[in-house]
Length: 315
Ligand SMILES: Nc1ncnc2c1ncn2[C@@H]1O[C@H](COP(=O)(O)OP(=O)(O)OP(=O)(O)O)[C@@H](O)[C@H]1O
Ligand SMILES: [Mg+2]
Image 1: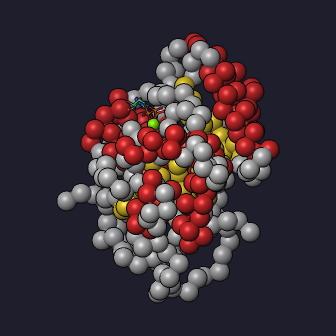
Image 2 (image 1 turned 90 degrees about the vertical axis):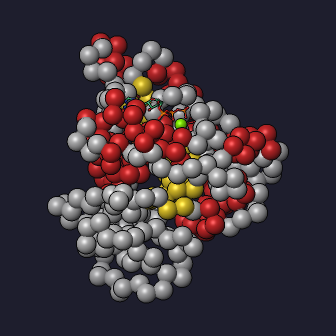
């Protein structure tokens, strides 16, 4: 049976390729489609945290959970938008590479930390924003994940960078996590005028075939402006080219990564006591648009194509 919660790492050891932008906007677009989403910010730069409108806060990250000092439920924060939650990052995570490098369970530490939330099944997707290095945080994220999504820029040496990360994925698959799937490769910051862009995209598509998402994200100024407003561009300017492509990308992603919405199901009994849900429950949308965030976890209904849930707007 299809597992209820999918854990997807968004990773590339190369810096500045659009990982965090993809995390933030994919998560936002999925939440607008009524998927319950948890973003886990694993980069001490905390750009995903800020991009989702939250502040960094000492002690509110996966770090104390990895240390065994806090239960994971204590660090899950709601955002301003329905269905969209985040475990923020903080500078202490910067020490994780050194501090946790000698731990016996270093490869499984993130998998173990996320286990209670995955098992509770309240989220459709848990999306991990990895730091730009092939260190222990990224490796442990890949061990924890069902799939890895690689954002890349169509530029010189793109294939070399891909070889590095796909090599890591292969090694993890052959050892600790045989079910890790190369979920896909998505082109970001595409400049469609450049010939090099077309050549690189063609080379990558020839090599990776249908692992490459059809939707490519164009370079778009609204995308780069959104983080300073603490709002994903898909909410800030939904009709911008960047937002439209992230929404199209999210559709493709959902088709590749079905959850409970996408498998036939019987009409569920209303859930009155969310015993298995985390302390901070994801807010599921009610039939009324822009309804106040619900405190309880209700069973989301299968989606119809015409539904276009909007984020709860700020007052
Ligand atoms: N489609 C886009 N159009 C314009 N600017 C973009 C686009 N995508 C990302 N950017 C900008 O490019 C920069 C790098 O993006 P981002 O932070 O998402 O990359 P990253 O891979 O997460 O970086 P790091 O490796 O440092 O974590 C940011 O300033 C971001 O706003
Ligand atoms: Mg980043």
